[in-house]
Picture 1 (cartoon, one colour):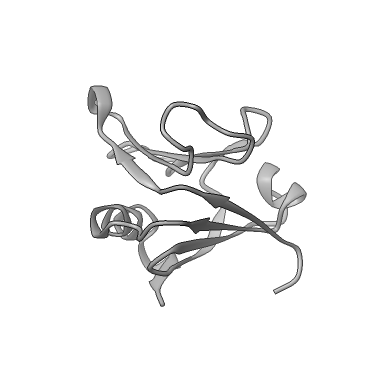
Picture 2: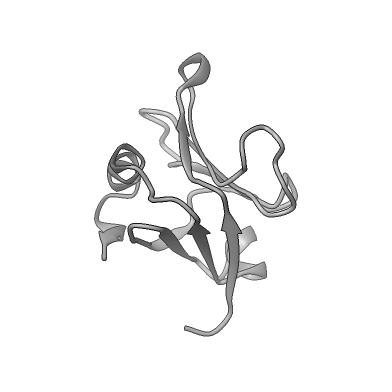
Length: 117
C-alpha cells in the first residue's frame, strides 16, 4: 500500500484511568514525537475519537479498515477525514506484542472494519 505513515512505539497499551479507555502508542507518559491515541467511550454515536501526532490531527472515527497483527496496527482512513487527507494510512509497529485485551477492544470499537492477521 502506498502512502502509509509508519512509526515505531515501545508498546501499545490499554489505559482505563477515570473510566475513559485510551489505547496509546505513546511510550508511557513521555509521549514521544510519534504517538497515536484512540478514545473509546461506550455509546458514543460518533465512534472512537482518534488523535495522531497531536491535537492538530484529531477526528471522530473516519476509519475505513483496521488490520491488527501481533505487533502492528494498520489503519486506513476516509480520504475526506482530517487524518485521511494528511495520511491515508497509518501503521503502528510495536516493539512488544499487542495484548489480546487491546485487540479485543479495537475489534468491538471498529466492528466489521477490524480484522486480525
